[in-house]
Amino acid sequence: DTAVSQTPKYLVTQMGNDKSIKCEQNLGHDTMYWYKQDSKKFLKIMFSYNNKELIINETVPNRFSPKSPDKAHLNLHINSLELGDSAVYFCASSRLGREYEQYFGPGTRLTVT
Amino acid sequence: GNSVTQMEGPVTLSEEAFLTINCTYTATGYPSLFWYVQYPGEGLQLLLKATKADDKGSNKGFEATYRKETTSFHLEKGSVQVSDSAVYFCALSSQTSYDKVIFGPGTSLSVIP
Image 1: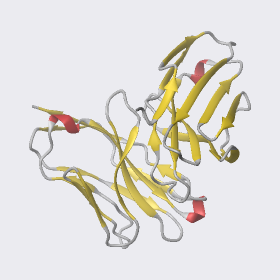
Image 2: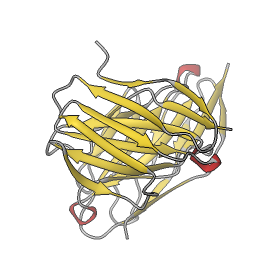
Image 3: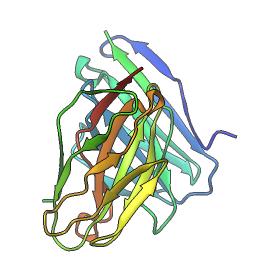
């Protein structure tokens, strides 16, 4: 029944490792997003995909790469993890034409040690 | 560019107190304005919206009026409850920002019994 789900919920890893976060939505939405929320709760958009096509690609290190195998999934791969990547990452989705009404997943707390 | 500014938190109120969280924006054109809420450990949820000047958005006892003359969209609630404790994000969306949602920095609210 979960509308937007993310796995894992918590991810603890060491610097230099490569990790992935998965996101799935069962709402039939056309657009999916990745956001990064820092320790002060500031929310920054990273990417958005519409029907598997990259629409928004904000200034993020190219160690971050989104991959959308189909309309319902948008995964985030992170290479060579750094301490500064520690944050909560949120996946979201929206219907075409209603990009303001975004449905967020529960978040993945990434801790890089 | 477009941006959103909110009053700094944290805000601490006693139950049944009146709540105001200030929000002002900078945007070209005619943006739509939103309030999102993030409960502890969860993703953001759309709380209310207003799409044109003088519109009032309302939901769950919260209200906000789109004031173009003061470029503001302040969130109010007449009587807060402990369950309203959360982080509140003011946001805007406009065609000049390619419809992506721009979030303010968030204001943390704690309501004590």
